[in-house]
Length: 236
Ligand code: BJW
Image (tube, rainbow, N blue to C red):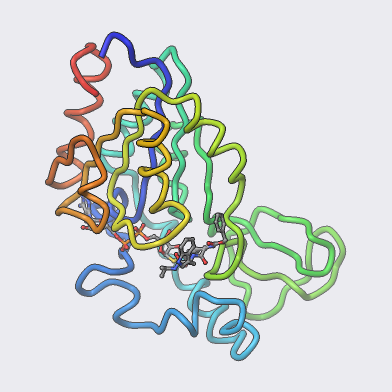
């Protein structure tokens, strides 16, 4: 642990599950109730924009009623106290890492709390619905969509993420199924670079075998324990 200075943490829906936000692929998750092709692809949006805008309006409203949990809080504490480089790469589009106090957060799949104007390309903070086609605050055109990354679209800030993994001594994956690329490939990228890898997840994921160590349990228990180990020089 003494030789660990730079840490990259990948988080997924499992980190927000105990805050009451649905995951995607668990029993009862979002993909049991909605077809991915309909609500999470540009083609689905082109076919039925009302359905997609309604789906995201519902989720945008819901996340604003949820609170960060002990896992978000522990990661925020690590962010505050860790003297080395640290980057929390989240696939989540909620803002619970930030509301817990974390600052070094990158949203690779975008955020519910932005609207993206497809006419002028400006992203504006957004908390309300989009279904009624409100005008873009920047250009006035009625062409706003959720600022999230759908299948077939390029996740955000990939160069910055890969640069952080190249500098990392430790890569930690928390609450993600390892089903969606490129995030699911980060552990292999890290391994090829000689980075130590740790998984914290409710159950073994599709990519568990790639990690040096995989711990199973709820994020609200595993993450605070690992953060304390790390801050006291015992984790990794
Ligand atoms: C708990 C818990 C608790 C529960 N405590 N844990 C091969 C290589 C590269 C790309 C591809 C490839 N094959 C196919 C592709 C393309 C595609 C892809 O990956 N498809 C797969 C289906 C195979 N990927 C893309 O299209 C991406 N773009 C792309 O690849 O561009 C080209 C490119 C290539 C190479 C480099 C760079 C770019 C875009 C993917 C966009 C994903 N978008 C979504 C929707 C976002 C908006 C929204 O929220 O609606 O992102 S889909 C959905 O899945 C969402 C999530 O961020 C993402 C991952 O889900 P996550 O977080 O893992 O959730 P779950 O539900 O799957 O898992 C939860 C886990 O938590 C489980 O394991 C539970 O056990 C656990 N858990 N409770 C701890 N209490």
